[in-house]
Length: 492
Image (cartoon, rainbow, N blue to C red; front, top):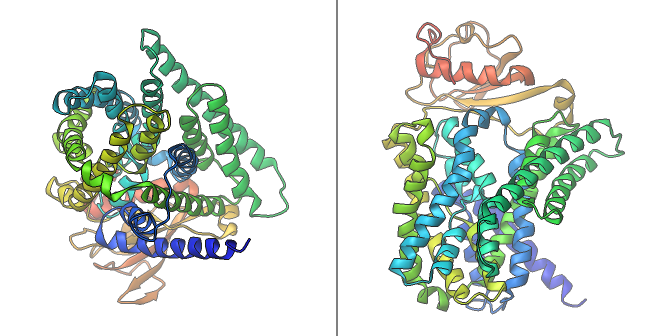
């Protein structure tokens, strides 16, 4: 009991520093996971001397955090935003994973002299991209929704097949013709369970009369966690069931939906912070230096060979422009997920697993710095960065749920053809209106004769039914001006 105040104090201090680190990471343009890992390393054996070297506990806590991160990812994903990218997203999260495992395994078998099973295990661990890492960078890249939607689906779904591959390869059991059937069963069953729990959960929450508003977010998260547990008990993919259940719930008309999304987002941040700090505690700087060369070799293979090949080959049916494929290849960031997956063979006592864990740490750090710093410039060079985007404001007011209304914030950037457009020419859907314009730090209620200018910030109120049409119209005028429809610009 005497140690409890100290433990709580240190935990609270780490959380406060980590929250501040989020803002720092956004300004610097790279994922905050590096700062969290750094905090863990400072607290660890090389810094304050806290020793933590239990791989089994790290794996269990890591998977628990991953379930919460996937829950938040599913709940906050808008189906209308990812639906156009459904095909590419699914192929990137399944076919591309298989290709990446094969290419990475073959290359590392030849370059590092690993036996085939261990080399493929390296490939499976490195095949999964990380949602937290990807979107903390994409937040400032300004890329169109089609590419963002594909990357969002990929990072939410590809954990499941990568996890299955790691478990199979780490088990040491013989791989035979039944393996593909097992993978299909696990993924399909996980999908069905996720859909079932999501739909049943939404129906139950809409009919429940809970005594407090705060119980609705708790119940929603509990449904997603229950989907994971049920999937694992059914020997299916609990991770996929979690994400799909969250996706269904997040796109349903839930009571106090905005409160639920805000709670899930906060819980997701807490899981990420705890996970990355924990992994930093587990890391040993001395071993990381020894794993520098294998980590750099594996990183080069993934970044320059396996990822581009898996993107190009898996997306052949869609014939995407080479610019899109180049960006998708470079945007496959690795984060906490590969480190958590690497803990599985380590806890199983697989020979060479410690070297794999250390190399993955090195790879994640190097690739995060390299890709995080260059992703936004690459989007601009390829001509994929948009001049302006409409962003949904996170509103915590329950009355908006009852009204079925949503808020959008739009900033008019330099070069936007919204500049000079009269409000009457914007022609938003009947259920939407510009309620406030902030110009030069002062706000005013616009009239039909008000003329928009560069650097204006608009607050748009829209019904939920007209939200997507409102965003499309804003983008269309941004790209083609007041005569967007005449020029055939739909804003899609």
